[in-house]
Amino acid sequence: MINELIEKTNKEEFYQNDNIYLINTKSEIGELNIAEFNFLIEERDIYGNMKKSTLWKIISNRTIEFKNFHNSNLLPYVKIKIIDNHPLLWNFHEDNYECVLNGFPKKPNEFIGDLHFEFENSTGNWLNLNEFIHNINEYYKKNNSTTISIPKSVRVIFEKVCLKHKVELNIENIIKIHKKGYTNRPNAKLLIFGNEDVCPNNYNLFQPYIIAESFMATKIE
Image (tube, rainbow, N blue to C red; front, top):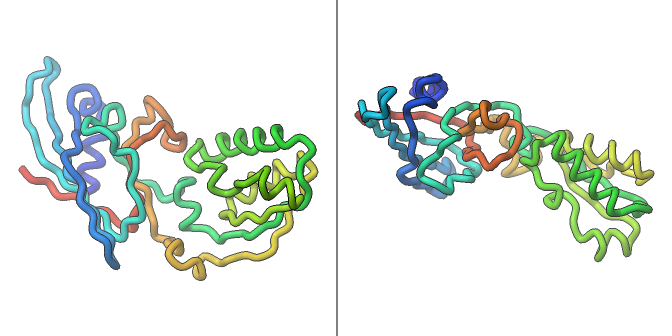
């Protein structure tokens, strides 16, 4: 039934006339990490008159995280989509590279600025640079080197900027996906409440989302 809900929320008339409201969430800690999200869908005619209201429940299994459900009214992000390939999934789908940056950049502000720019280009700001490199003045500058642990796709970003600024990037170790413990989640998927008429799903404008291994939905008439 999750496909029915996805199809419904992606119809043009849904965005024009209807709406989806978050009522509440409930999550359980345990092996399955089940989370429940209860929604009210209101269907209206072209004059704004109420036609029907329906309760829906989305259940996610082996839930990793959910964010940006700040308001009950999800407008304009009402179009549900499940995505298998997205920057938010890199840490759960890819090997990790433990790298050493040797040599402090001569123009550190430009170095960090270029990294931020490439992160925006490559991840749509879904990933934060500060998650991967920090203590730049207190550690990196003083020691003239620093160690970072990054997914394969993030390594490409660092390689490009390090080459430009003549910072040596050496791969010290590769942690294969099956040895990553909790983050070994190759089946993880992203369920996003988006609206690509407003913003592409690969760019972060605080769209609500859930990361889990599977999703199901039930309709309560």
